[in-house]
Image (tube, rainbow, N blue to C red; front, side, top):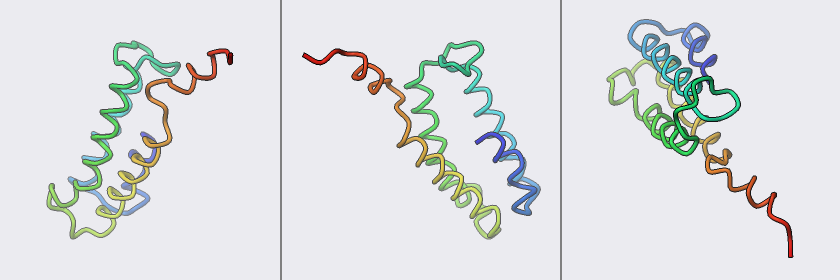
Length: 110
């Protein structure tokens, strides 16, 4: 997702405030990844459920951001943010942030 946010403005053809916001969000997501307690984390201070909650809020924010930040008239940037937010929300629904699947697979059947 970080790579998409970094290259997205150039590919979608928008610049300025909208592009800067995409770069800032990429930095936030990259920092969150480095700080999360999971194999890709480096410092590991953020629990995975907290990471999931932050990602969910960011995804919802991305969907409404074009209207909140008043750049909804820019079709390319608006569609980019709405689609990236929808993709993040879809991935959030598919991810097991609580590790329930691992625990149920590890418990022996009676």
